[in-house]
Every structure is written in structure tokens, then in C-alpha cells.
Length: 508
Image 1: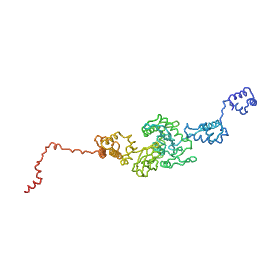
Image 2: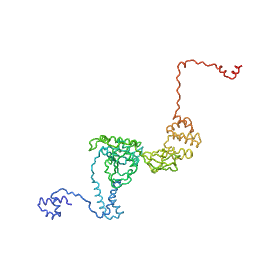
Image 3: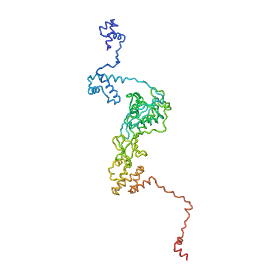
Image 4: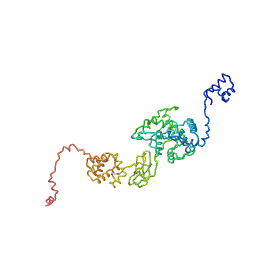
């Protein structure tokens, strides 16, 4: 490639020294066409590679490199192949005999092409389209830092946003995010755009064709929207929502929010979404809120009933009265342990049912290999086997959180009864939790300690007095003159006439 210094020599030789192009060609060695171009353009030379240089030794491995580069688009940025790592793998796994520099050059050319891709500005009619995606962010719930899954939806016309934090990207959480977004918008967008997330897509087919999860198809049928899925590794096709996640994480989740519950966190996020209505984005003639008033009438109406956001799983209890779901075990009442059961998995809780009634409800656990136990499920069994009380895991977990009056009352029972009898009476008292709230039991225990009540039957009476206090009748009103009138007492001898002897004497 000609340098700017050589350009100057050629131009001086022609314009100042009046040499011919043939003479300049002999002196410089440049082709006459190059000399002619230089005479017309003395600027710094620019060189643009129109096509990738052929590197014959790379031909057998180009497809492998292209596959690795495409797969890296779905990996964390810090865990993608470097050109050096590709060279090492090609050499070790495929017997590549070329130089590392050839790999570096080819990888650099491909990556420059990917970076230089040009996109088309898009515009959407009101109510027509929204884009959906999940992202991750660190939050603090009940003093514990966890990774929250951030459900994001953004309307195409108004750019109205909806953001919700969820404990997982499970299908039930995915559905719940949609339901809450539709309620927030006051309607359903006619088309929703997704990437190829597993909660919706079972198999990726050619082009835009997908084999969807049956539960997602049922959900879509309930709300009657259309779904469209992006091409594989083409996240820019839903760039609106991609930008929303980054925006919401930077502006709403920094510093890390500290909340007592998921509800508190989502209330904060909902306020942020509502506040977006006052913003006017570049290129828009109205605010987001004003555009949303135009868009809302074009949305599909909400159905009369909300979609039940759960997944259903058949479960079987083991010998400990536990059913397993996602590696965690949940208790059921011991007397119903061997019934056929179904588990309804919601985003925040699970319900265990026999098809006719709910047998157990637990807060959903997102740990692994953990036991979620309700001590009330084991009290009937403990009443039959009181010797297991001290080592019963459900009771041990309960003791960590119950009020100290429970311990004080058990100590008092054991001071007045034998250890076995005190345990039996205490278990009978604990079973009252099956029918009465904890605060009533706690108050009854305090009263029992004052009244020295040390058996379950008397304790139940104290509970009943708290739940259904007896009502004393009001005294009747008495006239004032009756209060001041003196009372004349009868002659008691008159009652002797009722005696049998008097009757006999009177007959004579």
C-alpha cells in the first residue's frame, strides 16, 4: 500500500519537476494506475479490506471457530473464548498445525464484522407489541442477599415499562410476571416478543418456528395474545426490553435495595414504573404516560378470571410424611401420608392436595435438599408416641421461633406432673393450634401459669373463655318508689299450717 510520503514524491515529480508518468513509474516502481490516482488525491491513504484474506490452512477449522464464536454470544463476557484459547483447543483437539497469528487474524476479522452490524429503526402501532425478558440482580430480602430474577416488559409504542422481582425464572413465576404486567397495563398487548426461553419454548425449529411448551400455549390461549420468538443469538431483535433491564438495574437497584419481603420490593418497583409516565424520551412527541393513554384502548381486554399461575406435579409421600419437589421435601399431615396427592407450585408457596381438599400449604423453598416441616402435621403421631417428642425435628424447628412462654409452661407442667404425663398434656395443648390462632394459645398459657392450670382440659376451657367470653346479663331497671318502700316480712308461723301434723290436728 502506498504511503503518504511516496504520494508526495510522485506529486512533486509530476507537478513541480514536470516528469512523465512513465519516468515516475521507472523511478518509484509504482503501477501507472496508482500514480494516476495519487495525482488526483494527495490525502493520507485509506485501506478498507473488502473481503477476508484467504488463509488456506484455516479452511478445515473455520466452521469450528464460527461455531465457538456464535456460542460465546450466550456466555458471560468473562468466560468467552480468546483467540489464544481457540488456538490451544484447535491444536489439542483437532490437530491444527497453523500459527496462532492466523487464528488471531481470522477471529479479529469476524468479531469486527459482528460489531459493525447495522440495525433498522422500528416503529410500532399502539397496543400492537410488547417485548419480554428476564434479567438478574442482587437484592436484600429479610436481611439476606439473594439473586432476584427481574421480569421486564416494555410496550413498543408508548415505551411504558413494567418490572417485577421474582425468586426464580420458573414457569409459574414467568406466568405471574405476565399477569401482574397485564393488570398494570389494564389490558393485553396483541403480540409479545421473546427470546427462546425454556419456560415457553420446548424445541427451536427452523426460522421463527418453535415447538412451544403446552402450559405456555394454554396461558397464551387464556389471554389471546400472539407470540413471536427472536432468531437464535439475535438479542437485538428485542432491544427495547434489553435496554430496559440495564436501565432499571442501574437506576432502581443501585444501591442494593433492602426490603423485608418480595411484596415490599415489588411495591417500590411498581412506583418506579408509574413514575416513568412523566418521562419524554428522545424522538417522542409526548410523554410515556400520554402515549400510554393512546395505547391502552388498543389493548386486548383482560379476561374475567385471572390465569392460575401454578404448575401441577404428582407427588408421593415417603415414610416420614414428606413429598419431594425440586430436591426439597414438604410435610403433609401424618394421617394423610399415604393418599395420592398433587402439588401445586406457585411462585411464593406450594399447595399439596388430594384432588378434593388442600392438605398442606408451605412457603416455597428455593434452597436445595431442605426439609420444610409443619409441626402440626406430626402432633397426632406424637400424641401416640410421646417418647419421640424430645428428638422430633419438627418440634425442634418450632422451638427456635415460638414464644418463651411455651418453655416456661412446659417446665411448670413437669414440676407438677411426671415427665411422661407432662409431655402428653403439653402435646394435647399444642394440638389446639389446629383450631385456634397462636396469639390465643400464648395468652392462654400466660393465664394458665397465673391460675396454676396444669392439664389440657382446663387449658382448653381457658382458651374457650378467650375465644367466646361469657356475657353477664345486665341488671333490670327498678322503679325508685320500689327501692324506698319498706318491706313487710311474713309471719313464719303461717308456714306451720303446711306441716302434716297441723293438717291432722285441724281435721279433728
